[in-house]
Image (cartoon, rainbow, N blue to C red; front, side, top):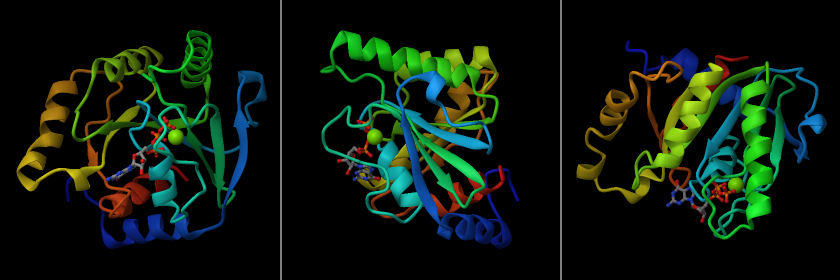
Length: 211
Ligand code: GTP
Ligand code: MG
């Protein structure tokens, strides 16, 4: 079994974890308001509109746990969800949202970056990348920061339902190859669709390992 795969037991552990109660804890707008670091946590980061909130909804089988929207820049706080009193899931504001005011962008960026650098219980950052666009410069800027802070990140491709089979061929492998020299890059790329549920069982299994 390669590192990228899970056996039935691991998949079942993931399924059970995400079938457990999950609740919204709080939206955080300043670092001093972060909840106590009582649980391990995983965070969903990525460009605005990439599908972070939808992925949290998909993983937890809830339609509207995290607010997803057509309107980019919807998530403006660090939104904390507690899963089964075992784990925090964190939905971050997206970066690269052009229409926000400069002051807002500066505020969210500072908050998000300081959070990513300084949270002791942060086990992994899932860096979401739109499968149609691939890794962009702004994604690499976040990777630079995470490399410097030694926070492990893993690329999750979103919206693979929008790709043709031929377009998907070799996509993950190419990304792994391109990023493999980065020190904090976890070299397994996950392909997902919150629309169809593709790849979510594996991602649940991956996350269950942190409990
Ligand atoms: P911000 O909070 O603005 O940073 O956005 P976000 O990354 O949370 O994105 P969100 O989950 O709100 O989704 C943005 C748009 O993409 C919505 O219209 C979703 O319906 C759509 N979307 C998300 N995931 C998928 C997917 O897997 N497939 C398809 N086809 N659309 C998706
Ligand atoms: Mg969002």
